[in-house]
Image (cartoon, rainbow, N blue to C red; front, side, top):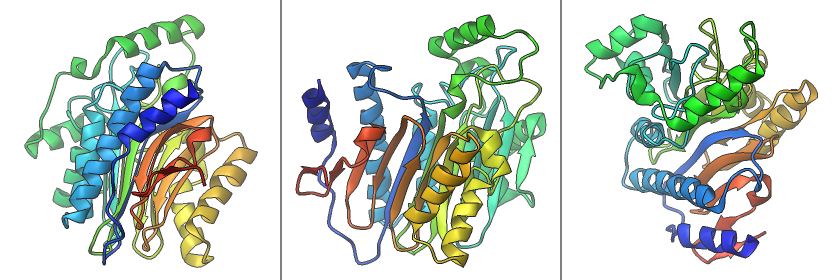
Length: 342
């Protein structure tokens, strides 16, 4: 079985060009959580790896062609939002009441401009609404029906709330309701299902974006870290770009995304060291589960998580591609020479 999975990775991972004159890099995630090889079939694993590979490869090629980082973040997240595999956009989890409330955010490292939406119910691609807030409003965060109306006025594609539903999410809500009484405010296992993208473009600018459907069975307008700048998303050309996935309440309280960037900027820490400190020390000590993807101005990439797995893919400044789901996939790298385990 391991050989089959390894062969699958070999087939998916294509040639990536050598380092360009101006470094570029991209990293994506599709959520972190209790992901073990026994929890999904080989067919399901193949589907996840395929879309992760498509997303990271298309994003990298756009960066190689000189595309602006903000465009690549939006395009890549939109691809993930349109997939039923992830808890974002089409495929988002359901609230206790059987509806969908979606969150998203974006931040640009050059200007520190940011935009976000929370609790939208009719925007087909919430990441586009977040970008519209960034570019066409004086605000950073809009929520609920007001955010929906703003998105509609901006000419974004609107859909019925049922568009986001899939049989898998409907069944997940049924099971969640059976396990919890009607006073429960705690979300279900899908709380870690978020998508995110961070990039370094050829102009040397960082950008980050995150999108989610939140927690299965969430109530009372609960909002997690994904639309909160500094918690789930942050980008600053002087330090790094970060997108987070995990138990949002911990990521909010510990300001995970901005904390990692602050350690890089003010303490001069290596990106991976900073991310490891926050995820494996600060969060782990208090029971906070999840992970981050991050990129620094030199094009170094960090894919850090303290859970059993995280859907992830990246191509760093050297053109090395990583795609993985489980913890043991962490060193699966292809650099144009072949797959290595070192």
